[in-house]
Length: 479
Image 1 (cartoon, one colour):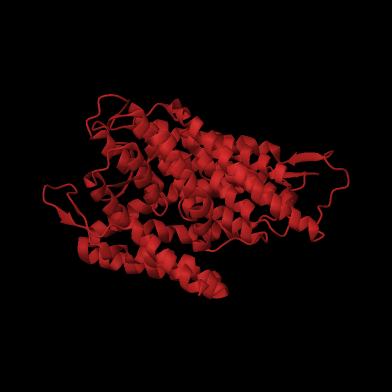
Image 2 (image 1 turned 180 degrees about the horizontal axis):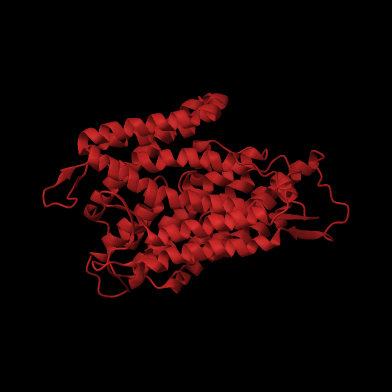
């Protein structure tokens, strides 16, 4: 019965993310149909991620690359029949070069550097300590990104709570707050806001979202404290105790020089947003210069610079850090390998769904902040939140508003821009695939013996605790 509920829940969730039909004019005056059935491989891959760990866990662990390759083929071949081999090759190559490559390189760099920093001391994972760690990680996310904060904080949080039996909820709220909500204050925090900055949204405009973030932090930290306090007392009652000889007297950080390499990576991300707007990186037509690969696919020089800096930071981090630190961190390559395999499948198979979104977005009749909040958020829960953000930002820019933030896409009212930004950043927490660090935190938690819920099991947590907060946000900030 539990498996059936998991299958049906994930299936209906995917249906919500895929419009039934759409007509779009892509580069021509005549409308072209985007067949909805091209989204089936994407839905199938999501179902595998949701169901296979429950029904065939060991088989799934060893055969993930084959399953992902199968779903990619099942998307690419029909796509080629509909759009032709050239368009298919261009679409897949553009996805790999301009989306997946920078995505996985950033994750890899942060994974490597954070794995070379270890935190040790006489801090037990008590409710108060955990609330402090979550609050710190959430605020840190806007400084070094949700991925950076997640990778930096996840191992210390797991280590401090290693003595506890009931700790899965800690990592769930970690994903809610550190891996998602905390990134709303700066363009560094989350890629959608970086895309907004590249299109004229002022760098520090996102600080307008600080009241929303603090409001949500207070609610979620209060709820978390009550849940964690109950679990903590049960663990204590069952005889579990942390191994602390001199409570509160010893604390140390090893590998702290790796903060330099984290700053390098953050700088690389900022450069990727700033350099494309500089004349030195543009040709006469205003296009960003780069290495031409195929059709209209170009690996831009700003992206190449970002990749080189991140890989250099990862290399220097390993060269300058004692391997004993990685041993104490229980560092392995399993988590990044799993994410790399699954997400290349997700990125490629979701292309038809993104085409549907781009085609249908401007014609949805969504104009009000509350509508923008829910539309952007619901789709960001299953699709990449960056293109989702851009679709609705573009839509808002075409609605002929006269007051608000002036962007290259048009004038967007502050409340509308706030709604789009919060929807894209906050609701990526609704599923494991809604934002890149979500699955990384899950994989590292699983690797370290923390029992995490299944794909749909996690969604039950988000529906129970996040959706009510989002409803309150709508009434307080977006109506």
